[in-house]
Image 1: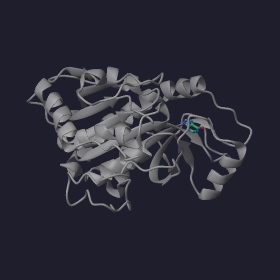
Image 2 (image 1 turned 30 degrees about the horizontal axis):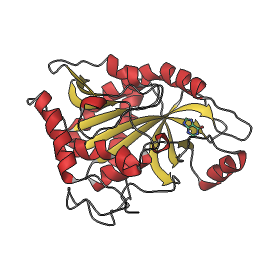
Image 3 (image 1 turned 120 degrees about the vertical axis):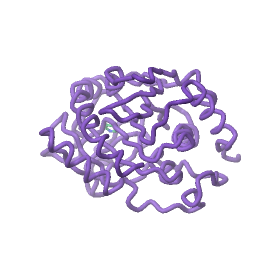
Image 4 (image 1 turned 30 degrees about the vertical axis):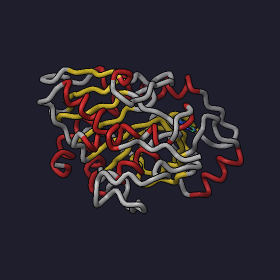
Length: 286
Ligand code: HPA
């Protein structure tokens, strides 16, 4: 069986459709809103380019099947910075391929995006941390059992899109420093940690939780890793904010409902951190 990878023509078609909706809109930063954070998108300033594009209308995009993921691309402005906002994302566990769930990242790159701030809900592997705290991700461990770059190499963004792309500094140090400082300015002290990527959808067994703790990771989740890999392959600089939505320590029993409740509560703070840091990030991204 050969792996189906997106074609350059499919990426161009989707990007062209988005561009046609608002030819004057330009943004070099994107924000991806994960589980429970979609409401941040509802409060964004969508002027002077009010435009909400449902994923289902964009050629070659997928449908969001998970509760808590709204499924719109918003051409918005946050903190006075124009952004492409993904209100929802796609996951490997939904049954889509790694290549499919990361298609949107290549489309953003084609639209001129040079930096992405991802957000997600994550389980916490550190006993002393509290629910609702936000962690700036410093690195990841891809334990999802696959890689979105498997298959013929789509060399759309040279010199980045090589067969064997570099993944060092994949959570950009300069972006991280700015986000940390920006958050501090508004009184939000960010944690810091490595994100352990699992395929899901089952939560981790107790033995897996122990293994993840030994690995040196601080948080665990079922998204972001494939998207960051494709973003780096497309020359996009990345940062990620994970909200601790549940303790992922042996004996803990998270539910999706509890996780959504915590992420809903943290959404306003995440929104404020984004609003405050985007004007700083745009200076290094452009
Ligand atoms: N495990 C995996 N993914 C998650 C978790 C978790 O505990 N919480 C939020 N996403």
